[in-house]
Image (cartoon, rainbow, N blue to C red; front, side, top):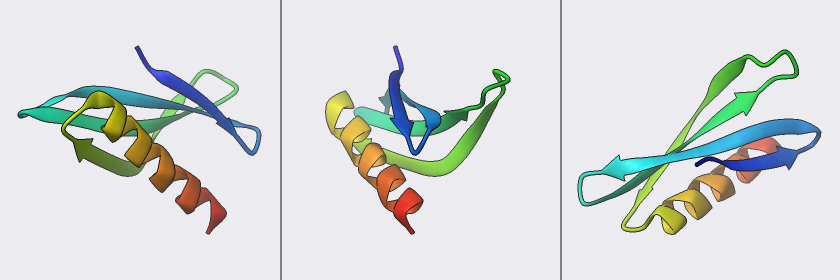
Length: 65
């Protein structure tokens, strides 16, 4: 299951998957036409929640720059 975010009118999904002994989260932008584009950020952590939170913080910082 992906976490959905709307930031500045744009839709993003945070996708998580097991990675070694922890989790890796990545971000995909979902466009109005249904196409998807990976955002070049990722985060790893011991738990899925921690990886999701970390990649969300990175995304928000990237969009504020």
